Image (cartoon, rainbow, N blue to C red; front, side, top):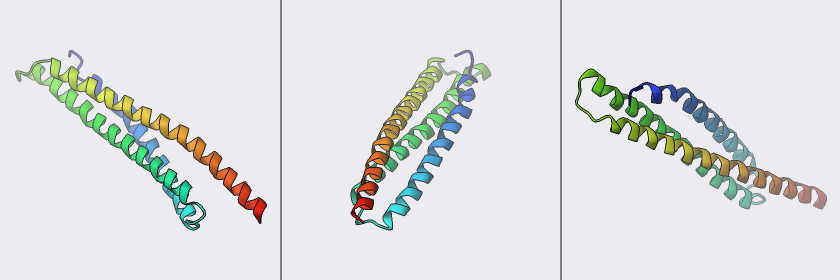
Amino acid sequence: MEKWYLPITILPGIGLLILSTSNLAVSLNKEMEELLKEATSYERLISKKVDQLQLLTYSMTGFYISTALMVLSGIVSVLPNVGVGLEKGWGLGILLLGVVFIFVSLVLLIVYSAKAVRIRKEHFKQCLIDEQDN
């Protein structure tokens, strides 16, 4: 790979994805804390939110792995330029693996978003039913 710095330039974008995913996890934790105050009423909803939190955790893990792979790809790709005998294909292979992890993590975020809408809809319906009963 001629451009050893290419994988390093992707890091700020991955950092923003990690930051936004972390913010989602924090707000999900706050929602769960509120629901846990009435755990018996919201047991099913809490279970779904725990599943959401697991998706976010997997996604963030994928982003962390992809970040490490991007850095490693940059390092491996520059080694032939400084005289270390290493085949150039390794850097590209590691870069592609990092991109795959980014893709998988983004798919997990898409699944999370779809589930979040369904869970909110269910929660609102349950709140309306509870309000009508009172």
